[in-house]
Image (cartoon, rainbow, N blue to C red; front, side, top):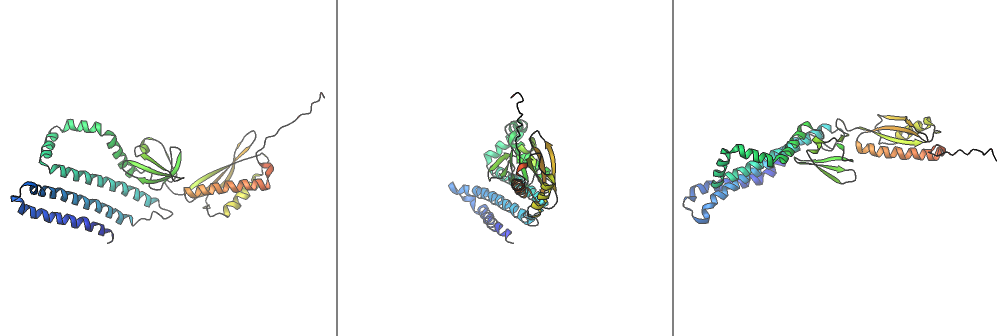
Length: 306
């Protein structure tokens, strides 16, 4: 009931305007001068009133439907999908309502109505001109509709775009706002996500695997590293207890590369877990195996001639 209160004011305003229209129809026959334009102004206001009511109604219906979905819960994949679709669909419907409202207001003027009939007669030429002039705008609008149904991303998805890592914060018909990890906002046209590749870390689920690389000397004891990794993960709530791996992934001329894979419930937690594991593993090496840290060896040979 609280949602419908938003509709009371626009409905009452529109109702008063309709009643005034009935009054003008009966009394305006004898009006002259400035008073003669009041019925036409009233018609325009009625169109605006109905447009206002429809815009408010779409917002109410969206809120009522979205109450069934909680985007703040941990497993919110379906909720984010519905939120994304409804937000874009509401903007599409609102855009159509506004365009129709403007069109009805213009048609209410007799001179413009005659011009409109002339344009309709030459609709082929007008269509070509409008098509060329509005090609980019129409393409952007169509891209927004495609994103609503194809959904290459959803609200609150973790993405990597233009080398920046962040979350989808806002999805509009013509542009998308990405909230970068340092609170900056990256604004991109909707066509960008259909024409260029980007990474979506939470496309099918929120959980994610993070990697940590450690570079050490050849003398490092790998079994001790694995035991320390077990201890670190068991003592942090950041780990979701699904993935825990330490592997030697490369051996270069001076260092050994070890890759640690750990899993977390979502991308922000995975970032914090990676930082935590990296710090604790380095502290462990510094304290217990300082000789296993990367080093450069120099071999000095005795000069036999001396």
